[in-house]
Image: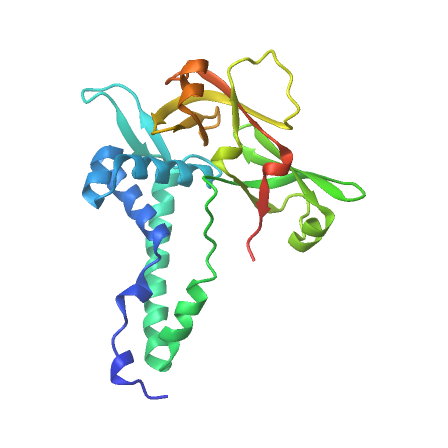
Amino acid sequence: MKPSAKTQQVKPHLLSAGRKHDHLELLERIDASGSISAAANALGMSYKAAWDAVESINNLAEQPLVERRVGGRNGGGAELTTNGRRLVAAYRRLDKERERVLAHLNRVMDDFDQYYKIIRRFDMKTSARNQFLGKVKSLKQGPINAEVVLDIGGGDELVASITNDSLQHLTLTEGMEAYALIKASWIIISTDNSLKFSARNSLCGVVARCQEGAVNAEVVIELPGGKTLTAIVTNDSIHTLGLQQGVRVCALIKASHIILAVAS
């Protein structure tokens, strides 16, 4: 098939990996500057957006890719771990191969651009603030629902309650990778570890930061394994519980409030 004049040049958007590409560039900037703030400024991102991206990246990796550096002449910063640097190198190599393949397809298919746009729509996007990648540790099936225990690393586990139909649809088995999605508004925060709760999940850590809004506030909890969990609570709750950086808290999550997803 002879390429048309329109398809002889590869379109820039075909070579972009979208949001993931931005995350990789953010990692590169952090590696170069040793600062999340400096990396955000260089990319025209807000500091909060950069922190959200870093936390999302760490949550989806088996081991942290970015570490905070405490102290020093400039009061601390951030740096990539060995895994983080190897990930960036692997992704850039993949990026070059993708450019080569897309350029070839664009030359031999007149309508490749049209179908590529449709394919890109299949990429998963979700409004859930918390996303974790883990491995199915155990499955317990009942008459209607099933209990799935997901190991998300760092000694933390999540228990999800899903229907048997969902279990079959996802074809979950022990040892299989799966994503856990949790909306920030579904998380209850407690500072009293002596109480007993009906919530199946309790993830404990320390408050990394709080950001108050007009009515509600965003609370980011750092877990022992390096992952983070974000909760939305009222401003009144911030003051009543005395939430501030460094305070130890537990995040309570009902098993039915955890959505599981797998790669297709």
